[in-house]
Every structure is written in structure tokens, then in C-alpha cells.
Length: 281
Image 1 (tube, rainbow, N blue to C red):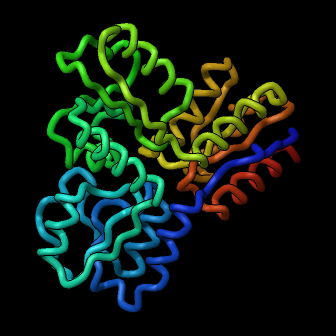
Image 2: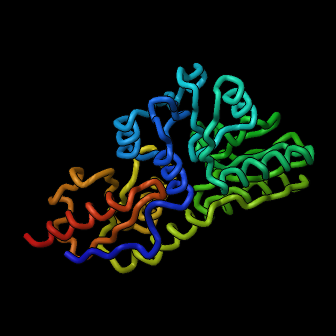
Image 3: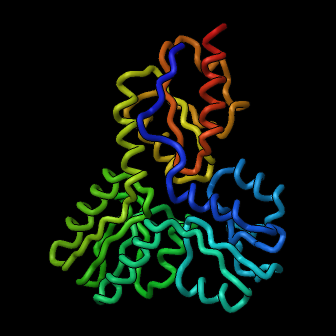
């Protein structure tokens, strides 16, 4: 079985920078990470073993018991940032710059007296942060969720890891349902997401199946998997090598390999080696 890697995959600069910050902390026991640094179980385990504490991803309101708190790569609202600053001696901020850009875009649209439509996954931690400073908004996950909105001034932004084709389809549906509205769109899909999705599109015609490596709750990883399925290519989502089932690869002569933006290089390499070892039998 031949293994072909996607041209662009795996850890992005935002995640790498966030990990670099944690590596520079002199005493991890004095730091509470405000949720999950990135959606990668291996990273979370490694940080816990180093001494970092974590606030639950789905309930981050109770104050941390450490003097320092660390904002994750997914970011928070300005309101949440002020709350954390008031409750702790110091805030370490690892928010991805491209997520900060999306925050600025949403606030800019609100300042123009627009009802903000955020294209994203409801409940996702990045989405919660993006809408946290907004007074008037809706989160739109797919074209079927679009409706006619009461406001005549609309603004559209997206979660940074949404597929550009899906964003375009939702924008088109919004315009169809609101033909008289003044609509402004700010493109906030991040470049690493675009590159990884394009790389999968280049990969699927050349393989019989694809292995997608990444966290179960990673939005961009799930989107890579979804794209494979949309192009009728069998795809297996794994977080680590022990989830690879040799039986799944029966009759697979060429397998593609890709990974989400929070997947460590070493994890990708381990999966690659495991696939090659399978092909030896």
C-alpha cells in the first residue's frame, strides 16, 4: 500500500505559537488554561502532565485558582478578556492572530449598525468568543438555516476554519432570502484552512482512501473528513495510531494522509509509519 501525504496539512502557525508560549512558562502549576489550548487530546494530556490546570471547555465561568490564566488559540470575547484580567494577576494570551482578525471584523460590522451573521458551528469555542461582544447576531451553520432577517443592514463573517465553498453557498442563500438588504461580507476564513482543504482536493483523485488525523472536536479536522466524503472517497478519522484498523485497508492500494491544524508533526509521522508497516504484510 502506497502512502501519499497531502501537500499542506497538520499544525498551523497559530497552534505552533500557542505551544511555544506554554513551553516558555517557568512554572506550569501556576497557570490555568482557559479551556483546551487546542483541540488535540495528546496536547491536552501533555500539558496536564507538565502541571497546567484546565478550565472545562464547556464551563469556563468559575474563576481559576491560579494567579495566571492562559487564553487559548481559539480566543475569547473582549468582555471575557476583561473578566479574566480582573480575576488574575496576569493573562497569557495565545489567541491566533487570524481569530483576532475575525473578532475585529465582527465588531466593525456591529459598529456599522449591522445585524451580524456568523457562519460557523454553533457552540464551538471560537464561535462563542466571536459573538461574545455582539448585541445583534445569528450563527448560521448551513444554507438551510438561512432565513429572511428583520434588519435591513446585515454583516457576514465566518469562523476561521469554515470551508470557503460552504461560506460562499451560505452567503448566496442570505442574499436570496434578503434581496433588499444592505449586506457587507468580510472574508475571515484563515489561509491555513484554505490550503489544507485545497490540498485534500488535489489528493482525493490520486488515492483509494484517506486517513485524516486530528482531534474529535476539531472543527477543521472534521471539515477535511467531510470534504473526502463529499468527493466519494472513503475516509478514516483517527486521533492516533492505535485507532488504525488493518481490515479497513483491505483492497486499498494507495492511501492519502492529511491532518487538522492542531495535529502535531510527530503524530502525523507516527500514523504514516504505521500505515507503511501495514503495507509490508
